[in-house]
Length: 217
Image (cartoon, rainbow, N blue to C red; front, top):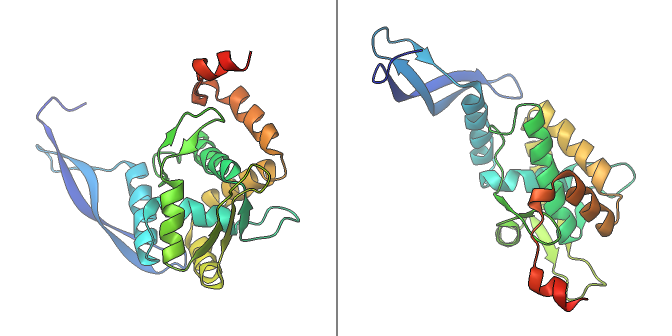
């Protein structure tokens, strides 16, 4: 290991290829350089993250909007492609997409929103605002729920489907595989079933409201 002060953080350009095999150059990838030898040490996860950022820029969307679009586009059994029913379920789909990618070492490289504990399990901090942004760009339609009996409906527009198809083709296979796997696992479940699952598997992501709990007694 290099002694303190013997290495420095630098930004380099990394030549690679995209999903079609065409050459691309990732600019400004963070790396470490040994002062004495000039040897460059690159973290593969940072290269993968730079690739994800390049893909998002190519399609004109924000990095954390990519998981939203991929989740909508993923085919899950006999369920209709391009639509997600229920905002709470959407939060959990995005959370599990990230956590399962994390288990195969792609968590740091995957562009995603921050998640925060809530009573129903983890929620994506900016999902609502990101959906509104995608709606203004004409990529999604959102029917916000006004009651507990009618879930929020999010669907890709025709333009959104076209972009999602291209984005899907450009995304790495492990990300696509996990996105489909998560949607196939969670989408058929009831809202209560998803909550029980996430509470059991990720108890730290559940926020408890003591005051409300006492009122229900």
